[in-house]
Length: 569
Image (cartoon, rainbow, N blue to C red; front, side, top):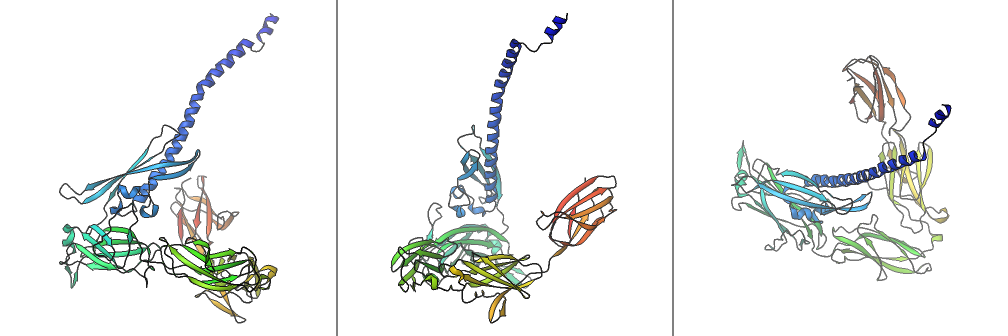
């Protein structure tokens, strides 16, 4: 009996263990496809999320376009609207960089069966991809764009060069170039809308419709509007000539946006029509303020950019031989040239800079002659155009760097009251804490090897506030008084608040909390409590209701009399 009991208490036999392992293996094998499918589904979901974001981005950009410009040809053109659209989108994913294909379908809907004017457009954006994960499913979004106008409708708009017969066609796949000035602009208004532009008498005044022509350069310059009033003689065609700016050929070259808008006699605007063209009339204007300093092993050159909009790059020459180029996009227009072999002091070389446009046309050359000098005996030239601005409690200083080769940095001097502090920076800028409601004066000197300083301080940029110290203009920077605000908190908990406490978390919201006193008590339902004279920054308020429910909320206090509502705990 005891022997039988002992055999029954023994563990699993080998056969039972083997059976258990086999069953577990079968179960695991059955679950592998489930895990694989889950991983595939997750990858698909991520790809679809990216594709959906691409489609939504395109839809939002579509809504910002002029109605007339929304066509399948324009949207598929990579150069359209300065590259805002196009037929591909590259995105970094977990499996590497992947290209998403973007397709557009634009369906125009007329006003009615008898009125062929287009009232709205249905735009479908389809985003797809190829390759893993598979199977790929397209993301499709559709939106409707309505013509937003109440005034006369422009049905055609053309831009031409000064040859009156040469109206440039709108081929989106070619570079559209105007080769002479003035530029002729011509807008055609829908004949059915002309009656709304005919003169109207309102009180003692007579009003008439018009077409406004606006021109904006790619650099952001907006030129005066040219208004052409309605005339029975010209009918539906409104024409004008826009003289390209600049005193000589080539100075005005670059991209321009030409826009036309028609207005009724009662000044109701119709649709707008915009075309973008490049003007090319000759070589660009030359650079200005060309300057430089030459050492024994290198020369530093600086200049101000050409005013022409289509400059591609600048070519730099030494004694007639090209030594380098500088792209138009360079943040600081200058060139540092290292000599092939060191030279003695007093050697003379002629340097020149030429602006080159997109067609290779060179501007007149700016030239100067420089003599090499020994940096060991060189006292650096001073910085120029020292200026400052106030950013809350900080003074932000900038200046134009010394043109002397070998400048290692700048000493910046600040005087507040009778105390002068020196700062050192290697760049031509310094951001320094000054404090609220404080006036300080600043000056700058560059230095070279051995600590040799410039003989004079920096000149101030025109318009800055100078303070004369010992016959030298110092830059004055005054910060404002610390702004103080009120925070109004309303009790929306449907209960009386037994306590309401406010904590300051600092101007960036990362400081240790400081309780604002006194705490509020007995704040009734829908009543408010105000804390005044608060510094700007992030605040948290905690409350306990009459039935002992607690809650907490944070908010930024950066404006006067800010009211923030609590939430029900």
